[in-house]
Length: 143
Image: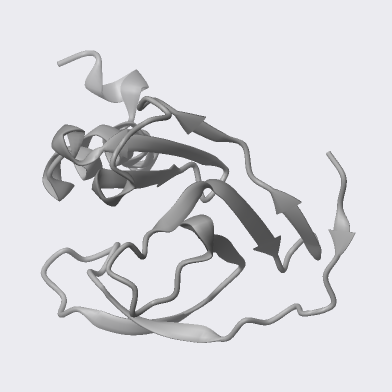
């Protein structure tokens, strides 16, 4: 993979309202997150924004990464036929912006399903790690 050097290291921050991790009944808190990756796409057939045929070309995406200071072309998995209506394309970005896939709009999952599928394993591992600290197996196994 060929890298192009990127001098910019800070793309700014955005505010996020998050639920508390340690105490579930505490109020939501605000925090700032730094933007580490920017995704660049081009217009399909160089259409302008006001054009009724304007659509983004998801097959060619460039990733600007502020951590590695590089610009790379992303590998996009296309699951829809080449001759299609590009207005019904959906770009699915997973693994912290490392995997890209184009699907048809009819295959779209609702956000709850996606969160359950993506976060369930990680959340369960975090909870097991937390509960492991509280267990005393040498004592509790006797009961």
